[in-house]
Image (cartoon, rainbow, N blue to C red; front, side, top):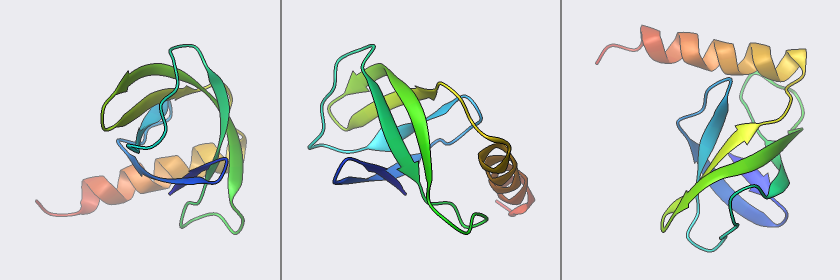
Length: 88
C-alpha cells in the first residue's frame, strides 16, 4: 500500500522505476512532487519515498521514484522475484 498524506492508495504495477497509485479521490498535475509512504512485506517499517507525478487518469496516478534507498530497492526486487515464481 502507499500512503499519500492521509490518502491510502493501493499500489499497482510496482517497479524500481515507479508505480501506479489506484485512487479516485486524489488528483495531482504532471510534475507534482510528493512523498509516498510504502508499506512492503519485506520491510519492518513503512518507507517514505519521494516521487513525481508522470501521468494521471480518472482511476489514479502514475508516479516515478526520485530516489530509493537500498532497503526499498531490495524489497521491490523481492516482490518482483516472487511474482515471477507464482504459476499463472
